[in-house]
Picture 1 (cartoon, rainbow, N blue to C red):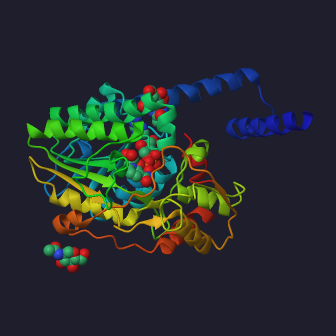
Picture 2 (cartoon, rainbow, N blue to C red):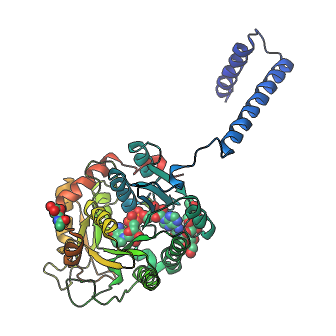
Length: 415
Ligand SMILES: NC(=O)c1ccc[n+]([C@@H]2O[C@H](COP(=O)([O-])OP(=O)(O)OC[C@H]3O[C@@H](n4cnc5c(N)ncnc54)[C@H](O)[C@@H]3O)[C@@H](O)[C@H]2O)c1
Ligand SMILES: *[C@@H]1O[C@H](CO)[C@@H](O)[C@H](O)[C@H]1NC(C)=O
Ligand SMILES: *[C@@H]1O[C@H](CO)[C@@H](O)[C@H](O)[C@H]1NC(C)=O
Ligand SMILES: *[C@@H]1O[C@H](CO)[C@@H](O)[C@H](O)[C@H]1NC(C)=O
């Protein structure tokens, strides 16, 4: 206690001594001096604020003007896993990007990484805002000139959606409606929408093609399908260029190790299989729980289609380039190849070098046996094919980031 007090008071008196050039501190004179310094500082601050506010002295932000040859993309949810990877790719291809995210699930650390990579003015702007707030969204569209929107922001865990469905209809369906209204109001003509294979539910016939009937079986899939329907109906009477991408199970991370997947620890229980494998490999959890070994599949475990995030963002750029006014393109984004959970776990063991303990448990309700895509439409129409189809390699890349980021994006991830 005493010690603490002494060390605190010491530097203060030395400072006033060196400032005033005095041997001892006269409290009255010190107050006077500090007062003057404070007044001068306040006046300077006021001047700076006035200069900053004066429009004639401040050039308009590059984000608020349309520049020939520059495509300005609004990336909602750009602090999240897929949105941050998409932003990196867009910036590398010389797009101008504005990220809007309220960091409820994303990481400011990811935005920092991107800002450090592209510090030049007019490249990347981050706006902290909630897409459920109509006024904020309108203000963002009023103050910025977007050419296109990639709408990633959402809540995205099937399990959580069954526990808190309203959160899903609110943050997926209703927020998409607000974004669409602002786009219409401010004449933004291109939309790339993040949809999901969960909108199909459990079709009888595999692989899934784009015209497979959509019968979602959980609030997450339903909320996404409703958002798709809204977009689709709206587009019938507008000149908007729309691409709806239905992703399968996304894995992997930036091959150069700059970005990774860092969901909130409190979402661990709802997490996806890759996160669960890595947590087990790191000893954060005691092992991996595989639910269901009696499905009608070759090894009894569920089959999914795992798509590497690098391929996924490539599909977004191609969709953006090929979007046509007045048209809606709907595409599955997957590898076309199903992998069982057992295969996935084995790949994860090899990629991490850890002999992860696996517990086999009974089925979890709501899981379907087999889901994989037929990606031939996107291949034909957008000339896109998955390139990163080696599960073990994708997981190796992701694991490398996980290992060197034990706390995700660290302290920066919280605001
Ligand atoms: N990860 C997958 O396997 C997968 C599969 C299919 C579809 N998708 C879709 O891809 C998109 C991105 O998913 P992700 O895995 O990157 O998720 P994520 O949680 O990492 O990213 C979502 C981002 O949106 C932000 N956000 C959420 N609500 C917001 C709001 N109201 N206002 C502002 N920002 C908000 C979050 O803060 C977060 O940064 C989602 O639309 C998801 O449904 C993901
Ligand atoms: C994010 O947005 C939601 C509404 O979608 C809001 O309730 C929540 O408080 C926001 N979170 C933060 C951290 O601002
Ligand atoms: C989603 O919406 C609910 C309101 O239904 C809100 O409380 C919540 O904070 C929102 N955002 C997220 C990320 O859950
Ligand atoms: C399709 O993509 C491949 C490789 O990605 C490229 O070599 C080829 O030129 C593309 N074809 C067309 C028609 O654009």
